[in-house]
Image 1 (tube, rainbow, N blue to C red):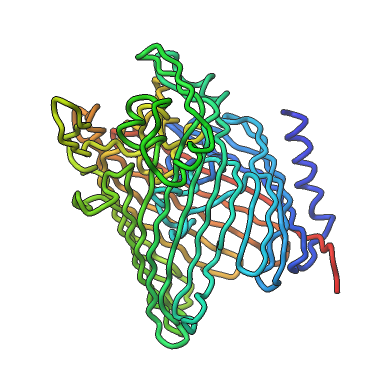
Image 2 (cartoon, rainbow, N blue to C red):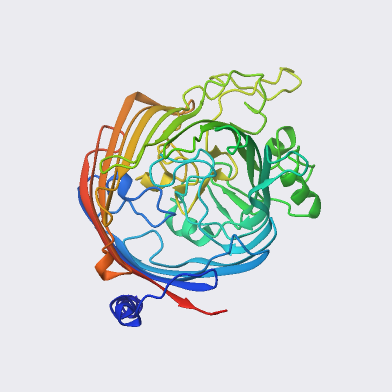
Length: 493
């Protein structure tokens, strides 16, 4: 580890001598970065460790050194290819060393494909200011996968530009089996070699050249399937089937066959999760805009239809202000996950033939433990991740919450930018394990970034954050990072 850190330190400080070339569609971008957090109290402050693609840690006084090389896709060329490798060495992180990203991708016209492990953010939230998408927030380590689809909106033929569509299909595998074995207490369940599937489809209507209002509708679904489940309470090891028909059941959610356990036969095979998205944007030709959105999360068939009231969801508004030195973007979000289809649940049987799909436990699953990767929740981090659990149980203990999130950012000068995020939640625990009292949680952060023009390629960030409340306790800390970004041109015509 010392050799790795020393090598990356040398890369960082020698980068300035390489010089920064201009970026073209055929440029190779290289990045070297050092990040360190210091803190006191219960944990690393919340917004110093969450929504960092798994590169945060609740352990105090942590950090990492990072070296990466990327080639981005060209959006103007008919055919383009890209790829990247991103190596991270850290201290007091969940994974002290990781190949954080390693992927290759290509596109032809609007169709694209990606193979490997790549950072992917939520489809509609502002990644710097939002609390996070309910299904994918950028909170957990990337999942290695093969993904194919139309990744950017493409105009639908024959609609004169009034309708656009995008979507994707992917299969992959979780990589935290060894970490689970070492971290999870022997008293609790864990999994091994779990497979992954996800898909999404979005439709956008509107033509901003004719009228500034646009609307979006979308659905995204994901499934954990296959692999091996170690159920401590039943003293049982269950190896889930992975035949072709089981892969098809991941694509088209349906009940499992007789080769699966009872719960999979009466419900849906695998841990199926998903969300609906509805958004409206007002995009006038002047330099301001406003966007409103609603995301509704669901598990299995529960809340996937209108059979149960949609009381839960993420409501958000994002405003881009005219250019000024104070505030450029404001985001407000309200998060409600308290209902979860109510407290009553029953799988139909001979004694009670009625099926009642209540008492959801968002992000948790009796067989696949939870919607997490390396201990970090894949969805919205305000539903506190299992990595915080001091008993080393890989479950989400505070899924029933109501919360408010406010964030804003600005550019006081061409070299300086900042962001502020403030979050407040109240938690009731889960239906199965409710808190003895309602636990509140406040998390705040302010960060200032400096990208000096006179030192082209260099950037640095300094920030302070704090937590308070009974859910995660009191913490205060700061962050400092410095990095360098440059380009090699591999083609010149």
